[in-house]
Each structure stands twice: as C-alpha cells, then as structure tokens.
Amino acid sequence: MVKHVILWQLKEEYSDAQKAEIKQGIKEGLEGLKGKIPGLLEIQVNIDPLASSNCDVMLDSCFESEEALKGYAVHPEHVAVANGKVRPFTASRICMDYEI
Image (cartoon, rainbow, N blue to C red; front, side, top):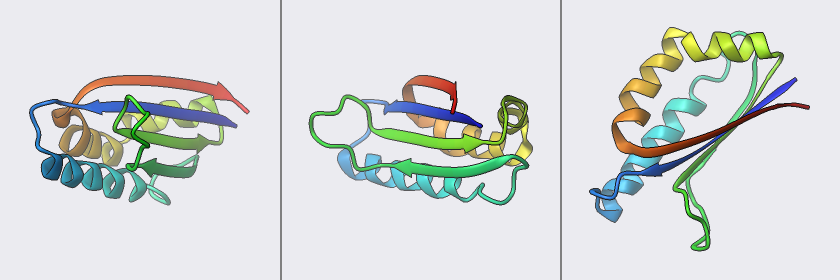
C-alpha cells in the first residue's frame, strides 16, 4: 500500500471567512472521491490545524499501489477537484508518498 500526504498553504489574499469556505470546499471535493477512483482505499482531509501549524490543509490518503496513485493523479474526477477547488486557492504544496 502507498500513503499519499499533501500539505497546502492557502494564498494570503483571502479573509479568514473566505479561507474557511475554501477549506470546506477542498475537504468536500477530495473526500467525495472515495469510491469513485480505482485503488483509492482511504481519503481524509484535515482543515482544522492547531495554531502552531504552518499549513492550512492536509490530505491523508492511502492507495492499493503506486500504480493506483498514478491513476488517481490523472483520473478525470480528481483532476476536476484539483483544478476547481484546490489549485486556484493554494500558494504552496508539499507532498510525500511512501509505502506502508
């Protein structure tokens, strides 16, 4: 199995209210992919970091294999969420993939 973890920082230009709305949209969009993408076993988005954190959103997901992760990356439903709810609003992205 493969873990896929991403940390995003939202763009500074948004108000706290806008950030809360954006984070909720990211959570709903990504978690809504469960059951729609082959090989995606688990997906959870955390949008409530502690004040000591230096990121706004965390994706924690698990895939059957590295091949399943590669399929997720280009799957039309994932691409639609990434292009519509994530990429336009984020300033930075850090990713770590690893075998478990």
